[in-house]
Length: 422
Image (cartoon, rainbow, N blue to C red; front, side):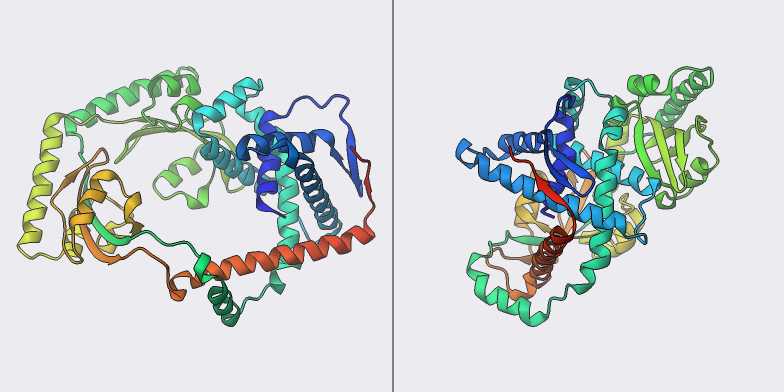
């Protein structure tokens, strides 16, 4: 299936109206395709890609054709008794899709769209559950029947590169970076004040006040505050201790005592459990650093910079002092980044550094960075070795689409399909 069609079938649910007196456009097996299925997708595409009226009929035919293919694959998947889709898988996929839509539209726009349609977030999730379940059936059919057939040889990749290298876009200049991050940490006094605020909120929750309301009023997490602290469904197996242990001991509706980590004090509530999945809310109460806290971080960063100048290894100091847990154990190694896409303060410094050198402390909203440049690559046309993996994935995707088209053609000969026009 074309990826944009699969995504749109879910995304346009934001704009779906009541389907009273809807017209059946096609029948595939025991599934129907409605006029509204096509209309909603067309309207979405016209808004996103400025589709002209002259192209509208061709677009409508393409959408209908893709929807028929989807229904054929869905029918075949449901006939295969070895293919199962669990409620747990659907729950996780719904949460993932919500996150994708939220990122695509932006949180504020997503919430505005829901409000305009008179939908709560939970109602919207219910609205897309069937589409998500159907997509999972199709994905599993493709995994079972088609993907094992897909083979791309190195010779095919090399031939494709030679035939298309002039059209392969140039790459931006890249830099391999390591960093030492010094966060501006609050003093013990600020931590104690935050703890007091968290304990007061915890007592209000224990006295029966609404969790979502207090989260919207007091939480310092900007990503979940307006959602009443809603973190969605999360797999327990993907949560690290000690938070995982705290959540495991909570029954639906129960609230944890405030737990402190480097972000602040968290209060968790479990809304639902489904196997390994838990539906979570949280309230974050963050200590606010003072001017003295900022100066203390600057003093530490200047001291680390002096040690680097005196010859101490960057990797050693990163492991000892960096506040970035994802890179600290790797000696601060971050990886390769397109230089033009770096934050402006970092980019300006990286442009001036040569390989093997490091920067003075750079103060940002995140904290204070000392950057080391480990390697630089000039921009321009990439070599075969640089794009070999990407081209392999591209050819795999092309072959996958070809095999899907072949399968749907075969299915069309054995499954009842009627196009009713319109």
